[in-house]
Image (cartoon, rainbow, N blue to C red):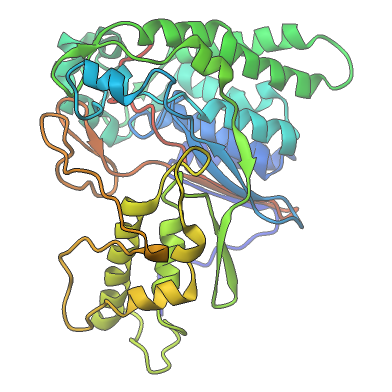
Length: 439
C-alpha cells in the first residue's frame, strides 16, 4: 500500500485534532514541558472556541487515557439528565419526544468538570497555563472555518426571531461569520478570566495551590456565577424543535450535584491488541462488537477477503449493521437502572451466532438486534413529528433550520515523550443546540 503522505515520527510528542489551532495549542504545551494531559485540556478548551458548531463549554466529553506504564482508564464527562427531566414532565407539556434543541434537551454540562479532574490528577500545569490559549482566541479572534457560517445561515431565522443572544454573537451586523474572517467571543474570554481570578482568590497562598485552584474552579462552575447564569437562563421559555417555547429543567442543584468520574474501560482483545473504549453510556462498545464479529484472522489474507475488495467491505458493513442494531436495543446508562449485557454481547459464542447472519452475497436491509442470554431486544418507537430526526449526516453535522442536528463532532489525541496517551471527544453544547447564555 502506497501513500503520498509521509510517515510521521518523533521523540517529543504528537497531537491530532479536528482543528489546527487546537493542535497548535497542545503542541505549545508539550514544548513548554507539559504532559499529554495538560496538552489535551488546553486543546479541549480551544475546540470550544474554534469549533462552536461541533461542541461547546456546556457540552460533554468522554476521555480514554493511559498514564505511562499504567492500564487505560476512562474519565466520564457525560452529564446526566436533570432531575426534573422526567417522562411525566415532558408528557405534561404535551410532548412524546424530547425536543432536539432548546433547554428541554439539555443534560447537565459535563465537559468542564472532566477537564478539571484530568488536569488536577494527571496534569502538571496551572489553570491559567492551560486556559490562556482559549482565552486568547476568544478575545482576539480566530479565523472562522467555513462550516461555522454555513451552520449559522441554516438557523438564521431562528436566531433573528427567537434566539437574540445567539444572533448577537453569530450574526453581528446581520452577517454570519465568513470563512477566514476573525470570529471573537469576548464574553467567553471574560468568563474564563473571572473563573481564574475567583479560583486563585479561593485557593489562597501556600503549598498545593495548583490543586486548590483547580478545585476552586470546579466549585465556581458548579455553584458560583457560572452555575447561576446557566440555571437562570434555562428557566426562560425558548423556542425549540417542537415548534413551541419551553423552559428547561436544569437547576442549580443539578449543577452542584454533578462530578465527573473515573471508570474502568470496556475492552476486547483482537489480533494481539487490547482495544479500550468507554462504557455503554457511550456508543464506544459498538467498535468492540464490530471487531468481535469479524472472522478469525480477518485482514490477514489467509483464505479470507482481501483488503479493499468488495467482499472485504461487505463483511465490515454487514457486521457494523449488527453491532449498531445491538446498540439500539441494549446500550444505556449502566450506572443507573439499565442492565447492559456487555459480557455476552462481546462473547465468542454470541458473536459467532451473530456472524452467521451475514449473507456473503446479499446486503441486509433489516434492523436485527440479538437476544443475549435469551432476552428479547427492546427498541424505541419510530420518531415522528417536527422534532424527529431525518437523514444521516456525513462528516460535520447536518443541521435543520430549527437547529436539529445529526452528524459528527470534534476530537483530540495526544501522546507525549513520557508515554502518556489520551483520546478525547468533546461534543454537545453546539451553537445550534441552545441560545447563547448572556455573559
